[in-house]
Image (cartoon, rainbow, N blue to C red; front, side, top):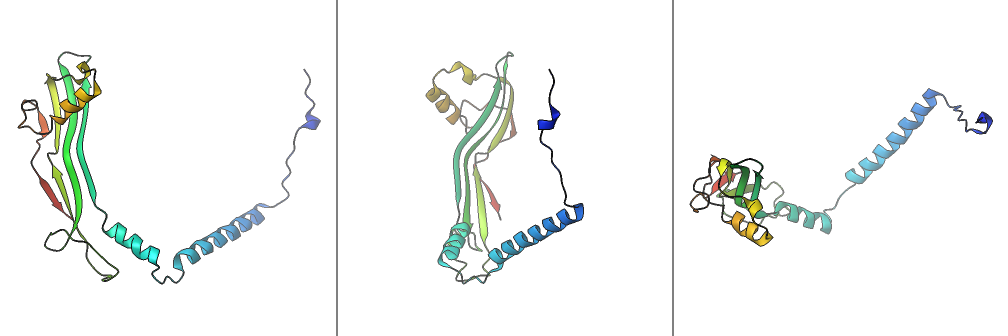
Length: 174
């Protein structure tokens, strides 16, 4: 099969390397100037800016009932590894660690304090686990069983080997 090479595309570049660099520099300076103008324009603290600042300053995070478990059922006895976290909360506080609402539009230099609270956080590694979640066929049964594993006081997890033992509450002051 003969291929006629005269019908193929041919690209010729008549611009020099220096002219291409100059064009790229000009384009990049133009885009940087546009970005600077967008960010450095004189803001009069618009309504949207004030609301956005309030929302970000007063953002609170509440997460509860996290249980991640990995188990290997291919060997006997079962090995399980995981973590439990009953709740994770981040809240704004004043300097005395009392919960507050913050409005930096009233005081632009206000210091923001946050308190992070962890309840029943634990990491476990069980080399001889008696619980096999894969034996449960119903999702609800698995959910109930995992919910029972949040505290070492519970009879289901009193034999667990914890790398980090669950404690009732851990506070971090930020």
